[in-house]
Each structure stands twice: as C-alpha cells, then as structure tokens.
Length: 360
Ligand code: KG4
Ligand code: ZN
Image 1 (cartoon, rainbow, N blue to C red):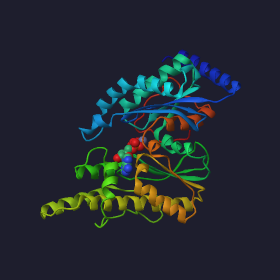
Image 2: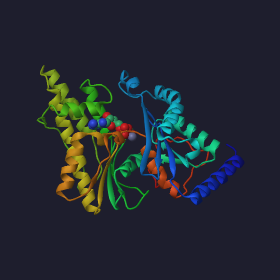
Image 3: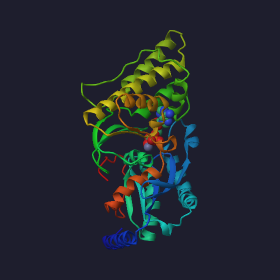
Image 4: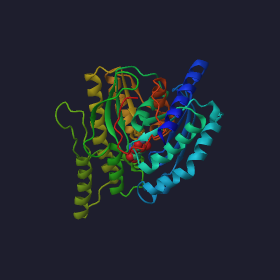
C-alpha cells in the first residue's frame, strides 16, 4: 500500500466515522476471528448486543492429526471466510452498508490463519470506506464478559486458553495490566498434552473435564505456587508429574484409572488458578472477577471459582459456554472500545503471532 493511498483511505474512514457519529443510532461492528482453528464472524451492536455470531469450526479436520496443522487451518479459513461473513450478516438481517466498522483479530495466533481474516477485513474496510480495527485475541476473550454484564472497575480477569494463562488487572475500559502469567505451558496446553498422554482425542480439555467427573482426585500431584506473592503460573512440572505417574505404572505392569488421574490433574490446575485469582482480586480490591478463554468452559474451574468468590463476596462474571471458546462477537466487543477511541488501523495492518497485549 503506498503512502498516498493509505492517507486518502484514512481520511475517508475518519469522514465515515464522523458521519456515523453525527447520525446517532446504534453502531454495528462486524467482528472477524481466524487466529486458530475457528473461522468466525459476528455482528455486534454498541459493543454489548450480539445480533449474530457464526463459527465454522475446523476441529474435526485437525482431530486426526491430534492438533492444529497451520497450513490446513489457513486453507480452511480461505474456503470459509466469505461464507462465514455472509452468514453473519444474513443472521443479523443486516447488509454491509449497515456496518460502521470492522474489528479483526491481529494476534496472537497462527500467522497464516490470522492473515486470512485480516485480508478479508481490509478488503471490506477499503471497499466500504469504513474503519478497520486490529484487536488482541486476549482482549477479545476478556470482552466476551461484556455480553453478560457491564464491567465494574477495578476488575481482575483470569484468562485461560490454549495459548494463554494470565491474570490481568483492568482499572478502566481498554487498559490491561498483567499481574501474572504462565512461565511455561498455558493451562489449556497442559490439558491438551495430558489428554494426549491418556490417548484422548483433540482438543483434550473437554475430554479431561468429562473424564475427571467420573474419577476422584486420589493421586497426589504437585501444585506450583511459585514464590510467595507471585501471580505467575507454571504447569510443566504438573504435566511431567502426570506423565511420570503413567510411565511408572506401566513399568510396574500396573494400570492407573484414567478418570482418577484426570481428576487429580484437574484438581491441581483448578486449585492454583482459583487461589491466585482470588488473592489478586483481594490485593487489588477488585469489584469484579472475570473468567475468560477456552478453559473457562471447564466445569470444575467455573464451580470452584464461583464457590470461592461467593465466600469472599466477590462478584464473578463468566461468559456462557458458547462465548468462552474462540468467536468473533468477543472481537467486535473489544473492538468497540477502540472504535469509541478512534483507534483505527491503517491498511498495512499485519498478523502478529506474538502480539503483546496493549491498551485498546
Ligand atoms: O480460547 P480457545 O478456544 O483457543 C485459544 O485461544 O487457545 O481455547 C482452547 C483451549 C484448548 O486447549 C482446549 O483444550 C481448552 O481450551 N478447553 C478446555 C475445556 N474446553 C476447552 N479445557 C478444560 N476444560 C474444558 N471444558
Ligand atoms: Zn482463544
């Protein structure tokens, strides 16, 4: 994109923004998410109301490989993206002319996958002269909670997904301070690796969750509390302990009840996540605790966090299951904050696999 085209484009979208603001009425954002293995598009009104939320999952395609294959994911996104956007508009009963801006996941994620969503978003933005907004995937997961209730600040968010485990402090909309994060594996990654060791299908998180409910947490496994006062996490030691338990049993010719091992692993993960979250919430006098990310679908985590927050009188917000895993409505909700702040991207927006979390 040459400089002249880009500056003309930016002037044009600022003009569209002013016209839309002057006209008043609801503001519709089209969200697009293609960071991993879901091709997703959604139409969201004023950052808080979902008009449509379409997800074309590729999980079945990747299942036989035991994980996401990046090249396969990109190709699938290319096949699905146009249909998915059209379907999101159709279900919302809206046309592209009704859309005020486009919010798209900029990172983190698989670069080839991200680029498919970004290319589609840029094309629509350029053709319609409407603002383009790059959104951090984790900001999106946090903003999935805004469909449940309005945020009360300061708040502490526990983000647990396949690639992330973070405790985040928000003092106002769109600002994120990382209080702690994983030093090795993400919580979801640990679930997926343990599931693989137990020969469960991909994605392993829901499988372990299911199996754990049939077992008892009777096998002693470590909890990584780290230094006193630290809000960081570590799950690789726990994962190794599970693998060692399995190997030692095998060498001794014993069988281990997979359900008990799953329950014990889950108990260790959940205890550390819950305790660090409520500790952070107390220390920062949070008025709300938010749970976000794919692992937020975990039943034990939801239940135990709810119990602890109730004991401590801390209001807890958890998205419905359908908004815990990757979707585009959450991207549009986070993008709406950038929209209100006029933080628009230029046409050289690029997919960034390791994008750091910054303010909206
Ligand atoms: O947020 P997400 O859909 O994608 C990423 O951004 O990573 O999270 C996917 C992760 C996977 O690791 C999956 O195994 C895990 O979330 N997950 C679960 C459950 N449902 C999904 N982990 C534990 N229990 C679940 N019920
Ligand atoms: Zn995610």
